[in-house]
Structure formats: C-alpha cells, structure tokens
Length: 147
Image 1: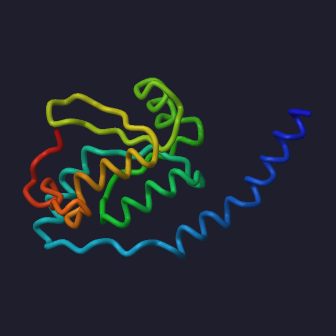
Image 2 (image 1 turned 180 degrees about the vertical axis):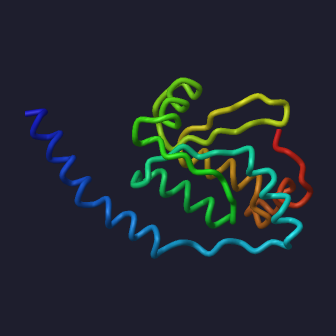
C-alpha cells in the first residue's frame, strides 16, 4: 500500500511541478527600489548569504518571493540533486531540509536558518526599509550588520 501511495504522490508532483514553476515566474513580486548606493550596500551584505532550495518546493518559492520583493541578490544553491550543495547542507547544516539560509556572520561564524517563515522574518527585519513596525531596515541603509 505504501508503494502505491508513494507513486501516486510522485505522479502528482511530476504533474504540478511545471505549473508551480511557471506560476512563480508569472507572478513575481515587484522589488523595492533603493538608491544605487543603498542597493550596493545591501548587495555587499547579501554576498554573505546563500539560500539552499529545491526549485519546485512551495516553501522555497515563498522564500524566493521574499527575496524578490526585497530586491535581494542572494546566491541560490540547488540542493535537490546529489552534489556539493546537497552535501554541504547535510554535513554543515546538520539536516537535509529546505529552504535553508546560510548566514555568514561578520566574525566568521556560520548560522543555518531553516523554515520559510523564519527566513522571511530575518530578511524583512534586516533589509526591509518600510517595515510595518515603523522602524526602517537599518542594515539596508547604514550598512550595519545584523547581530
């Protein structure tokens, strides 16, 4: 019985994957616009971030949409197929779960942040200049690093 259930969901995934990827492409959010100097500072900070993802994972799509909405140029590392990114996620991150944001802190420490909601919250707190709590994303403008 498990065999049939497994194959059923594999079939569903094979059918839905192209639609999910096309839907992501067609419904991309408009990114925020920053002054070129501010965007350059944000780009410099995002060089220390990498998102491990599977292309058609709904939670990964959610994390990528947050990145697009905030105009963040974060390296995407596909961990779906066997290879160095999948291996790094498992050995360095501790578990094979996506999405996962690899954060290299200014002191050289590496942090692994799992869960799309936690990743979105971290990115909004650090880079959104129009945060709903009334504070501006200080790191996005001043170049300060996130503690």
